[in-house]
Image (cartoon, rainbow, N blue to C red; front, top):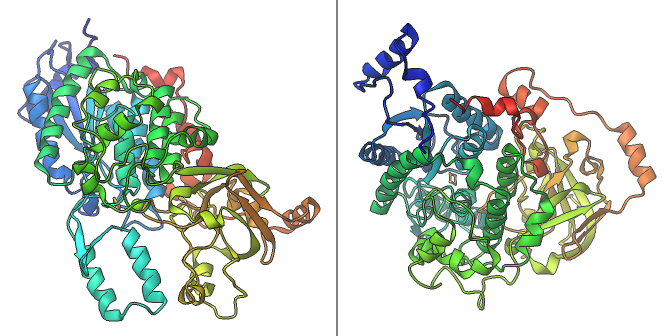
Length: 571
Ligand code: FES
Ligand code: MG
């Protein structure tokens, strides 16, 4: 039986309030009558001139509208905050929860029965999925695709990854200022998300793995005609989902999160996805402990041969058949019974795979890396956990003991990293504190601490680096990230001093600060408490309520549904 429309609470009746609501749409040229059977479909549009990654979504909104009309719904596009990773300071992550609130509250306040979420750049898809989880209205995620691939000196340029590599070359004096300038010109290659396996590509693929996007759509490049076809289908399909009463809470189940965590390992995806998946699961009240990433991730090798873990870029992943081909290859490790936006199970995605692994998607017999992406570390330096993307790190450093050099915040790092007086060797463990969720605030992507110029010039390409920050999905290196609790929340990371010995053992899942407990207690007693310079506005609210990385860095009052929270979605 078709459930009653939520929008009927706005449009039915003949009182002055219903009349006002119908007249409002009438002013847009949309005639609505009491008892109108057409669902109202919101199209959450995150396009913005401030965010070139999301530019491709401009056309897709029109395609979604056509689909909604064709299926007998009423499409209404609404703008939301947009988060462009490249231009936002201190970090787009500070605003992910704000965008999630924006989308959720817009849905809450309006006569909307279902929604198509148009997102792309790193934080926009997680924010929209968090909102969809909380609002629990029928929803489909549509991604905007990755940008064209530029060529520099005959080689394809992977967004982010190649910038970091060339920056190291330039700082080490192996790249001329002229080449550096020529390389810059290559980076403006057109709209779309980073074409590496950055956070944006990772989250688009995970949205599809969760069953929240239509099969095969998550890797289609920006501007490809197939993107419009997928968007049109999403518009049609969401109308049917409203009639079926198919809500995100029935799709994003614990089994679906397990599937997404498994896919994250198989694609060698971004460490940021750990935080985002925890946040989305937190919105649904589903436990997703860090250990789950290790447990499930260990079962599958990395099969996506995409930078920074592999050789190709996202266009090649798409040509190889996209997510359905990858899902088919790891089907034995997935629960294929999970529900999806299609109305069918995830096994339908697998059967839609148009071929076997080739090119940028490898087989289980011939993986890119034997072991899936993300290791979880705990110990005296990270009592609540930390993560390491093993597929982008150096196995030679997986067991390491070395003396710390500590930088407190970004300014300190930039000022002293290349100081010739710093007592450094390749064994040094570089520690950066003060970049967790509460600090700064927003947990910026400072975790790939550059190799000090002196060592880079001597040929050192990787070192153990530890921080309470994040790193871009396009980054690489033996970077221990998301150390929790962060220094600003009183975590032991804030107590590390130059020369302290630190032990990393990836196999054992250990991150140990070799300083006696009594000494740490004494340091703790002397430590200055964290003081925020933010006295007002969003940063203040964020700092007062943000949770630590293992809980997804959501605001505490936005987590887990309560009976009250669900009331607004019921008509
Ligand atoms: Fe937007 Fe990478 S900066 S997708
Ligand atoms: Mg990024």
